[in-house]
Each structure stands twice: as C-alpha cells, then as structure tokens.
Image (cartoon, rainbow, N blue to C red; front, side, top):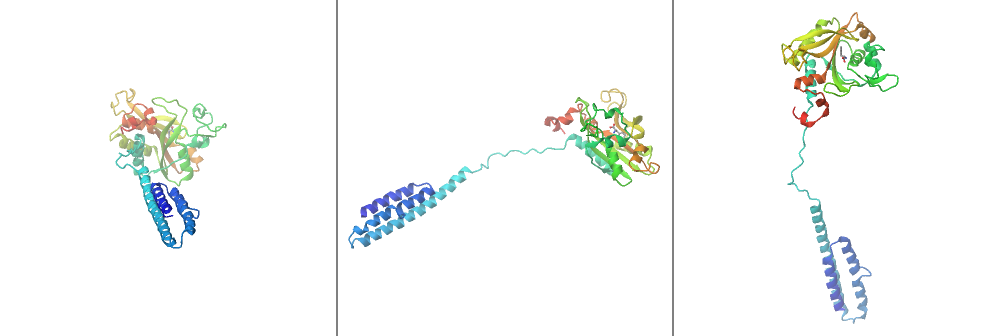
Length: 341
Ligand code: PHE
C-alpha cells in the first residue's frame, strides 16, 4: 500500500506540474482527490491492513492529500500568472511606434473673404441673416416683382422641385429681402450671404451653385446717396482707399432705380488688361432702391419708408482677391490648391 501511495504521489505531482490550464487542473483534483478518485480507492483498501499498520498508512495518506492540495493551489497561482503574462503580451501596445499625424485643416479661402465682408458690415451696424436655399417661387420671383413671363423663371434656367414651378432652389439671395421685411422690425440693416443655384454648365466662370451676398437697408429717408456712400466705403475697405467706382444704370425688377457698380481695374488702372478683359472696369455688384411695389407687398408703406439693396457674387470677389483664374478651383477642394492659402 505504501508503494501505491508513493506511485500516486509521483504521478499526481508530475501531472499537476505539467498542467497549464485551470480547467484541466480542476479535473486533476477530481481525478486524484474526488469521491471516486484514486486516493479514495486506495484508502478503501485500508481494511485489508492490520490494525498496527493502519495509523501509519492513514498518516501517509493524509499527508499525500495535503501535498496534492497544496501542489494544486501553487500550480493554480502559476497558471493565472502565466495567463496574465500571455494577455499582457498579446494586448501590448508598442508605445515607441511613431503616431499617425493628425492634419488640421483651415478655412476655405472664399470664406476668408466672406469673413472680411461680414466684418465690414457688422462694423456699420448690419446684422447677418441666414435663410432657406429651397425657396418658394413666390419669394424668389413674385414678391420681388418678377412677373410670370420673366426668362429667369424658365425651367431651362432654374431648378424646380414641383411640376407647378412653385418650389425651387433659390436663384439669388434677393428672397432674403422679402423674408427680412416680412419678419423684422424696422429699421432694417442686414446682409444675407448664401448659396444660390442656376442651371449653368461648369466652366472657368460658371457653376450651377455659387454664393451671393445680399444686403439691404430700410429706414425713413433712405436715398440713392446712402446707397452710393455705403457701397463706396465697402469697396474702399475691400479694394483699398482711392479705388475708383462707377455706378452704371441697369435694370432689376425689384429695384427702381437700379444700377451696377464697377470698380476701375486695379491691375491696369483703367487702361484695359486681361484682368478686366480689356474693359478697364470690373463689375462688382447689382444694386438699387427697393421698389415701392416690393415694399408695399411686404406691408411697408413706401410713402414713409424707403431702402436700398445690393447683391454681389462672392466667388468673383475671392478670385480677384487671391488672383485665381478658374472658378472650378474654388469648388473642387483639391488640397494642393487649398493648402496655398
Ligand atoms: N439679385 C440680383 C442678381 O442676382 C442682384 C441684386 C440684388 C440687384 C439686390 C439689386 C438688388 O443679379
């Protein structure tokens, strides 16, 4: 029997020391120490021993049980330490690897120009308003005194959403004049920058989407002199002091009288060059005195109030400012181009 216990000791301790898995270790415990385990089956044979031999064998067996238990416990610690070590290796992060560089973008050059314009107008007490790009034909055309037969209402010129031509992508920011007059307290001083849409093919000077800045003042006693003085000031702030301007008669259905504002070409001083296409002048914006019919349509008494408005293209301003010769560069978002600014 002593020999059997000795064999069990050797076999079990070796098996325990070889074990690398916690579940397997538990099954070893059952195998050696369980109710139907090997130690129990040896102890069952104690009956065969003489009464003198029993205590010594009992002691040996108990000692073996204790030793196996201790070996399992020790091994358990080793296994969990091993498992932890493996996990740490598997999940380790190499902190010496160089990181991925985060590149930070910057404002689009055209929005730098817009910010400059906003600053100029904020400095003169104007507020900046925002409005819908999906617009009612009523606001884009009708309330602006643009009648049913006007060519800009054609399906070939304007993006419509509905068969009855009532909902569209705004073709100009001028509907913001109507929104302002309908919702704001008088007097009004506002600019409304935003996207506008027209059915134009893309080329160096055209895009089906571009930006305009609308501006409007409504108050008592506003005259064409206010329009000219204010816009001259704005031009000087954008293009520099002493820039020569020219107000040329024009026609818009929603202003009367109407004009276009040109600046003398800053490149050639008015002689004519590629920048001004030989004209000597560069067109900057359309403007005029808000038509009495438009005022009245918005519930403003044209005998008491008057106002002026302008609309200018933002892209063209940015092209001029940064000496860019192709409109496409503004929209293509080619980083090789954008990163120069
Ligand atoms: N909306 C006009 C255009 O797109 C410009 C304009 C605005 C003219 C305001 C007069 C007054 O051409």
